[in-house]
Amino acid sequence: MKLSFVIPTYNEEQSIEVLYREILENMSLLKYNELSYEIIFIDDGSTDNSFSKMQSIAEQDSNVKIVKFRKNFGKAAGLQIGFRIAEGDIIFTMDADLQDNPKEIPHFLKKIAEGYDLVTGWKKKRRDPISKTIPSKLFNSVTSSSFHLKLHDYNCGFKAYKKELIKEIDIYGEMHRYIPALAIAKGFKIAEIPVEHRKRKYGKSKYG
Image 1 (cartoon, rainbow, N blue to C red):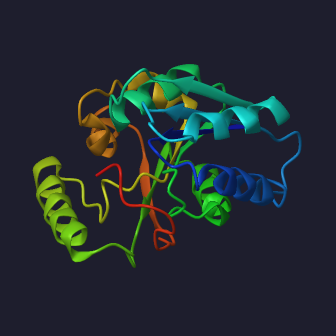
Image 2 (image 1 turned 60 degrees about the vertical axis):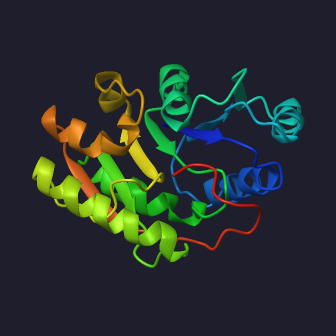
């Protein structure tokens, strides 16, 4: 089995190496035969040293791929190109800001093994300012009602997908926020699990 990690990144120079090490540390704990991985960093037009940090990692690890955008196109564009080139049987998406904890990877895989096509995280104890949490709760309430799909956290970036689902979903603009609804509409099975949401360590939020 091969796992792909798709990580859109915008000005996260201080977080990239830490996240890379954490992913590898948690991969080493997984008890699967013939398990391989790839990490796909999408540099979404960063103006700091994010790209050079990615290059340094890729020079030491052939399993790391980099896509560089000339300018900031947004999270959906990063996910779309990442999905297009991902070779894994299961594709994870994570934010690059270290608020997602890679120790949750086994919990996602457990749900995938139970037969779900998409497992989405729920930041049950969200470590964000009220200026983000209140709009998020409103968005989740309205979206759940509109699509008749009750989820606590549509917009959580920490998700795991079967390859088959990725091939069926086309995202653009802000459509990455509605991936669970798009998946349900196509007949895929979805699960939601609570995940640890860590306090941002460096900088400020880049993606909504």
